[in-house]
Image 1 (cartoon, rainbow, N blue to C red):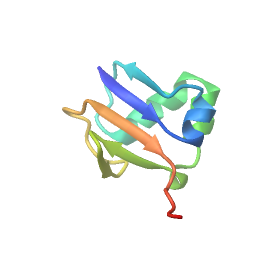
Image 2 (image 1 turned 60 degrees about the horizontal axis):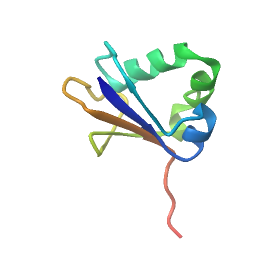
Image 3 (image 1 turned 30 degrees about the horizontal axis):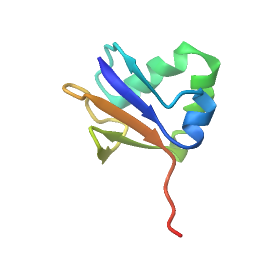
Image 4 (image 1 turned 120 degrees about the vertical axis):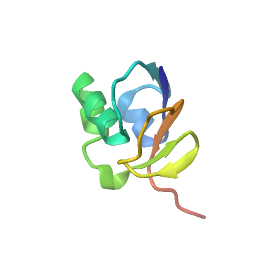
Length: 82
């Protein structure tokens, strides 16, 4: 079981802040592909990966990162300072 967190507009498009999911995905990219097949709202949220960042177990990483022992994956847009 892996916990998935959604932040900012990703959360708004999906309609949930988090969920737990049983997955066979071996990488973040495979997880995204699996999520996009769930419903249109997921497909829309993950349609432009250049507008997303991902963290696995609170470490910023890329979409090819393995999920072997991951407990948590978070998706969020790039952050800006102010």
